[in-house]
Image 1: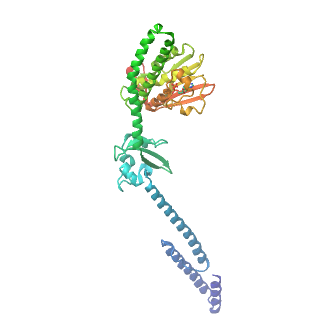
Image 2: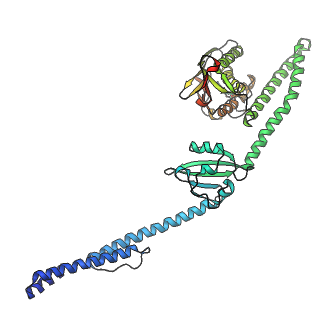
Image 3: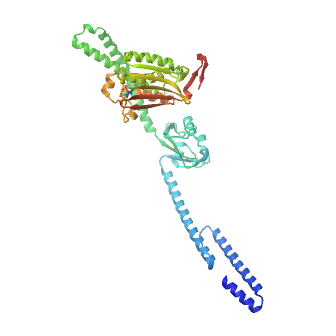
Length: 429
Ligand code: ADP
């Protein structure tokens, strides 16, 4: 620009028209800029880098700079494309059904096993709402609550004989990933185990009743027996009763697991039930414990009386059996948030923290000898956990060695009924 200005000034001075030549120099300079701008626009419009326009001065360095930036961003784009292709290939090769869901649970992409296991069409179901295609009520409820840590099991919509474990997890903003795994084999094995336990327990019931009957008759006339037989007969009778209790508990658990307990639901008067169980607990304790009951008489639970009796009595009798004589046991039934809470607090020996997560496993006992001596079956807390999950609630255990334990059960509002004055005035919460 400086050289062009000097040349214009020289020519202007020689011809006596400096302004005209200065004007021509400025116009020439502007035309050069315009020309380079047009070349830059043409080059930027090309999809590929193509050949870089060559220029001198300021336009030379502008072209160089922009070329470097474009080359960098093209490299990054190619790398991302490669990564994306690899990801799609990997997700397509997964043996589990994988479905990517966008906003409002709209299907964005799915792999081949999703067609086989979930019955999605080879290409036609992208853009559809997943809830319109998987219509099982358990899945729709799971979808509505946004999935969770635990998968659910539903029959495959493509083949009702197959069982699927379906898991929904959130990622990114409003995005979810749905995976489904074929667990038919595991499900059948589990079903086999349940049926086996239920059948064996059922088969054992009759011979045990016969043995218990004879033993009772013999022990009624124990005075006529030789001294060395008397103790044996009493022990045999005790152990037979324990076996009957184990068989009954196993059958109860099996019935709940198989969902055969449907029907027989009614609004259960919890306060009345707890008062009766407390009386039995007094008898069990032999008056050795202080047993207090504080209960909201207006709170009923819609459910089965036998299940609720088993739940409450297991926790109350455990407190009596594991708390030494003279201990205090407090039973409470009260409104808590949207639901209600049943709790049993004792000042017994307490439970070490590492046992707590395992207490609801079948036959898990901290001290096997002590549990047996007290007639325990090791199934009580497993029953409590099952009953709670049937009512959509949960069992919580807090305990400290030497300080006592708190077993509490939360019942959600949906299973509660409010009693107002007379039984015809029962109202859902
Ligand atoms: P069990 O028939 O042996 O009582 P449960 O399933 O009811 O079986 O209880 C499992 C174990 O939990 C018991 O063996 C006992 O060791 C412990 N346990 C239950 N309740 C209490 C309690 N209130 N205090 C201390 N330990 C308890």
